[in-house]
Image (cartoon, rainbow, N blue to C red; front, side, top):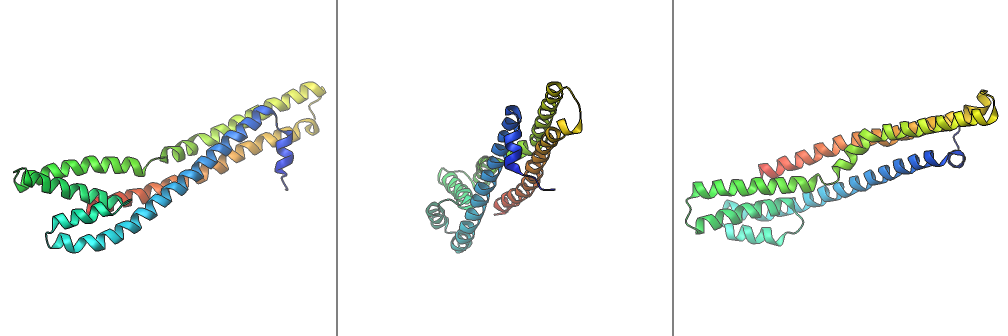
Length: 208
């Protein structure tokens, strides 16, 4: 069966068109979030590999100041900012007269706070995907309800309830529910996939 989207749009009532616009905006917001998060993850991961290659020898030889300098020079890498904060805190506490055990404990606390901040940054916008996945089917269902109400209005206006009178209107209404599912299903799948990628990335930071 061929579906002419432009013809469907022209036949839709204003409320149903509003529902379609809302679903379209949700879909565009999801696409924007996915592209943004992928760019952040891929860019930071690439910079992390380069940073790890540079900072590894300095850490192995105990040259913390050199490692801190390398971390400060790398911009846009979560690993560099995370490890750099830990090194700066550790060295600062040693210089303040703390023993290594206390310096390490204070560094661990600082890294926990930094880890929470990085996690919030990495998950920015993910609520858009989650919300779209959970609400888009219901938004589409709302469009269907509004479309069926419009079909009953056509019955009242024509004075008959033949399928020829309301068939097209009901078909248009059901298309909106389908559109809602088309928006929701990929949103849920991509949300789960991206959440896994982010969780693995955060685990990598903690291991580092």
